[in-house]
Image (cartoon, rainbow, N blue to C red; front, side, top):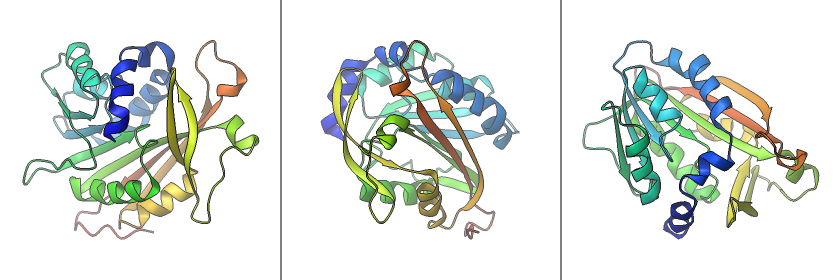
Length: 234
């Protein structure tokens, strides 16, 4: 994903100014994710951590040990500044090639709104990595979104496997080719790893001051890896 790292370097702090995902993500973290990690300190991997807010900052504030990963050098530098909590550590890396330190697994692997710029094949590969990186009896959470207007206008066309790839997308003044899927496709893929489906939470959101064309359907899927490490899907 190095071809997009420069774009996110340029976006930098504008991410927080232009995209109001803080409220719905923070609500989900507070209402759902915090209950998955009841005994601090536990360990969390925040993939595509961006500026570190709100996910890494919130989890670290609960006393958990958080590792934040992002391919943008600027985002990582911002995260280190914005989240000075010693419980949080941030690294620049591409999750496609990154591996945790030998023997390290996480109680929670969180991938929130960070997979759009990968191909469907790359996403499949990553999801199986998530299932490897999480501890036995741990959780994987994937957050995704689809802009409603693009669905209604037929701009997003799903293939026979439920994926829409290389969809042109303008994001904070930069052009991207994005990959989308609906929640049932995400669930099917996540279950194919052997993890067990726990819960789907969905809602419609729009950032303050945005027009109806930016109304977005957001989905969060929670998966569990059984204690035996086999985690047979339902």
